[in-house]
Image 1 (cartoon, rainbow, N blue to C red):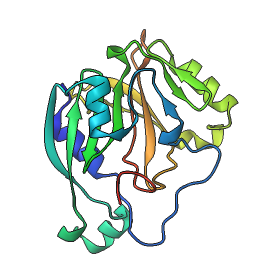
Image 2: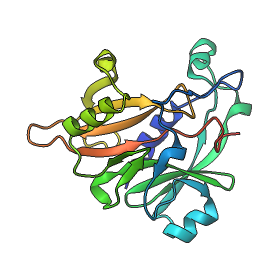
Image 3: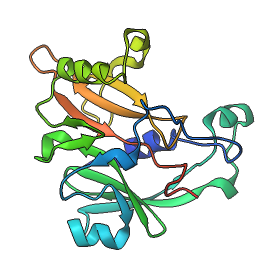
Image 4: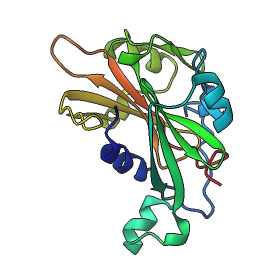
Amino acid sequence: MLGKNVIVLLISSFSLWSGNTFAQNTSCAISMNDVFIPGILSIGSYSQLIESQGYPNSSFPSTLNPINPLCIKKSGFVPPSNVVQCEYLVYDAFEYIHIGDSVQLVFIDLRKTIFPIFIKDFVINRTVSQKEFLYKIKKRGWWSNELDEYKIGKIESHYCTYTDVNCFYLDYAEDPYSSVIFTFYAELFSNKIWYIEFPVMRIGGIIH
């Protein structure tokens, strides 16, 4: 089961100012509209999710702050009127955020699913290595040697396992302040992908 306190901390950093902010419209940015997993709902209604995948293993309430994190740093606080009530729905390999009647996929643990994940024309599954991943995204123009600062070696904190991992951050179309995160094991004999995290759709999505 996913760590509640870790998820809330992670998701709460994905924020958006309610003023004149626009989604990234580059061909390199990943959109949730490009994400397809056979038999798995990516975006839709709560009733569609229950119909296709049944009820979640667990759930917990939380709040989401839709303000640009740069503005939060300047002001030092989050106005209560801007906080959005939400719920996290936890399945074995997937996690969703639930706001109103809308749900969106925000987490995939590839160790726990046999389904391939299609992103545009890119297919990724549990056997993909870091080397293969980088080759494929560079080939598509999603990554270059000039963007190496976005590759961060760190200790895994999502499950609180403190496993060495490498994370790769790619642009996200529905929130210019957030990135889609691909996390790989960084152990000597294992560099396969572990999980993918999608930010909440704050532009043209479930945050209104």
